[in-house]
Image (cartoon, rainbow, N blue to C red; front, side, top):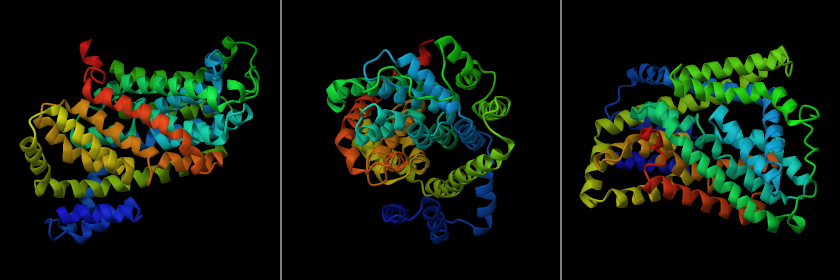
Length: 429
């Protein structure tokens, strides 16, 4: 099994697509791991047929509809009006809009693409350096996962057997803390990156997303379909009205009705929307299907149990264990795609964490935050590549600003790791 894991990491490092690396490994080591080829179709199909995983394509579909229907633009305009009193407001708008986008799609990369294409051009018009704008866009995209719902948390909950609703609740405070940390970093850097420390335009009238609005009340009324969607999704989940999967279905239907009834899209647009959502969902579910076979082999070979035994033998301190786990996960996040890292490391490390008495919900937040930081750290760094492509900015122009946002995220990670009451806040009520 050690050889298999080493080969898997080597394949990923040389650039083999994740959806190919896992199947190749499973097929190559099927005899050594006692995997019956005849069982592969049923095993993989049964894995992706689970009810909780149905939330993934539905949330992706809701995000595609929101983006195509102009609802993301409405969210951005509301943030512009509400946060305009702050210093260097458009940077705060990008952060706030990313948080709202995260409350709809649960995808970091989708958040970067949608918000970068909407807010990025306006930030450039107001005097922000392209590299800083793209770095802020990439960093703010982390809120797409930290603000619930979250696709990696759905994956972790499904494969480890933890309540997805509790994971969503546990991510609220860390997500809001990270959002505030990014706002503080932007506030401090704005004086250096802007000409004379101020945006070139202060009247906040250049967005022109969805038409002019005479007052905040009118804007809120016109944007109510977009603003109400996160309330429906999160309110329904936390009140117990429906499960996260049912919430995803409600979000998709709601977004579709808002698109058609609001006349922000046409029936002809639906083919492209459903096609893009289907391709993105199929790629994720294909990876999940074969990682489930790999994880089953890990259990049969008792690898998680061996790691747990080794960890508890090495140290009796949960704090030292968490420190080592953070270092390992940060490295894994740099080399592996977020969903694959979650599916691989969750079953490996969760049993060891349980041996130290670490709450599985708390550990899930730690794991996801760690691998999400990998979206900002090369060689993979998906958020950086998407932000660079969306905004037409070279990667090298982003690096001089990116360190501040990574540092803020690491501080938040330390707080989340060593202050369990932050993610587990809801248990005090």
